[in-house]
Image 1 (tube, rainbow, N blue to C red):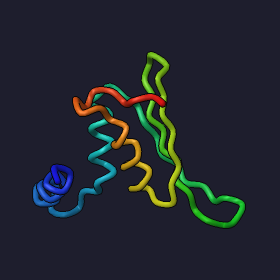
Image 2: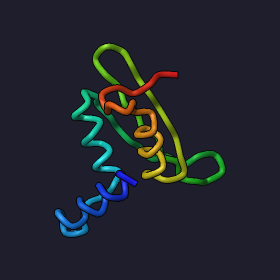
Image 3: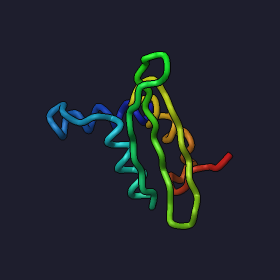
Image 4: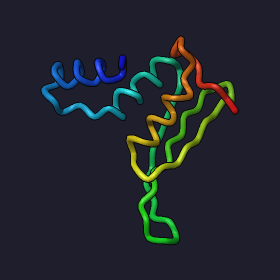
Length: 89
């Protein structure tokens, strides 16, 4: 519910042009993580997105998904409630 409120608030503030994955990326940066996202075509011709979050202390988390937002939501889901760390598996 909070994510939906944040998204709606951001869309109002930024005139509807903000992308939710960008908000997640900003939150990762604020929590001390660097991140990147790339798209590639797999052997079946499907586009996949790979998102990576990492820190200077060697912690890293990599996800892949069929959609960019889904990849970032997976990264976000690994954030602890405090929003400061990504849980490692």
